[in-house]
Image (tube, rainbow over all chains, first blue to last red; front, side, top):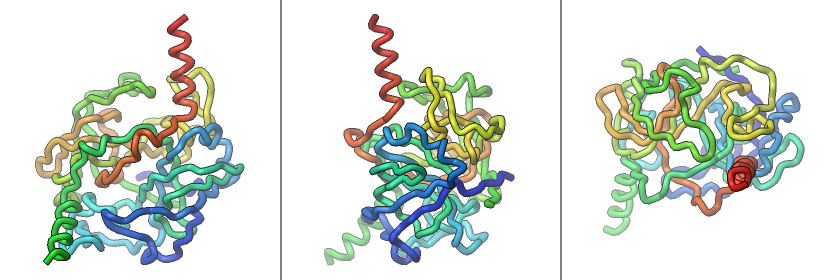
Length: 154
Length: 154
């Protein structure tokens, strides 16, 4: 067992999960901030040189469940929770890549938040490299997209 | 406070952190596996359609520290821990992108492990999109690289 604590909190325009854009075509254009707790501010030294950051955060308002299948909003069939970004997962961990716009002391102004306001942040890491887009396969996300396009074309 | 438990463990050719390639030029070419615990196997349904996965894992063998500066092996000066991938961080969370080669029941055969054998895995998520390489800035990583190149050219 591992015990984690918040190192800061998200400021976001979203106050309810229903407001957060979801699905493969969803764009995350919201500006927000990470307010790092004063006792962890020293850990931000030199972070301003990075254009993008990983945020690992806690789904602190997700209902606990023991169900290992999730029904994503973007598909009409269930998938294993580890093949989805469902908030209801064995460990309530969220992961988001944000663009770092500016640091102001213990506050990181970021672009691309998809969490709700007040979400506890557990860790921040520099984003160092990407997988080339032409090497990615998306499994059921791609199939669900294709079905939706087909349905729309009928 | 959030309590997390292992959902599986990493099988890796590395048995000591000193064996893991580190730094901006390091390539992670090691083949390994994620052995998901039997009670979580149902959460893997449809994961085989994804080419790449995020693994969130625990630095279970890192010495605890309260130091918020880290001295990365790739530089001669310290940086804030959130601007590094140091194992010694307020919450002992690691993050790795791996390529999924094959699923065999509860075992995921993956390429690109950089953890040591037996590392507890906390979560698995599909890798859905990349930040375009030409939009990335690397801060001190890039500066340390430039200094090393300059030193080597002398």
